[in-house]
Image (cartoon, one colour):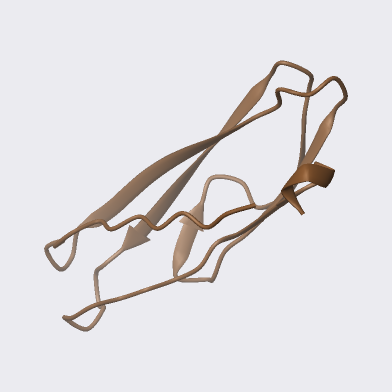
Length: 87
């Protein structure tokens, strides 16, 4: 398992910062995934999802900067799976 850091750079206040990430199942059995995000981030689907063999699923993450204070911002999205190699 590893950590990915996405730097969205400078974003004008009041705009939407968007990023899409994809989880793929390259194993020989179904893969259970779980995504959890803080309330300030909108994720296309949170909670559990099953990804079939040789299938993939995409998640869109949106940060609405309207009303946020100007300055750096950091947030974490938790991604877990049933893959024993990703533990």
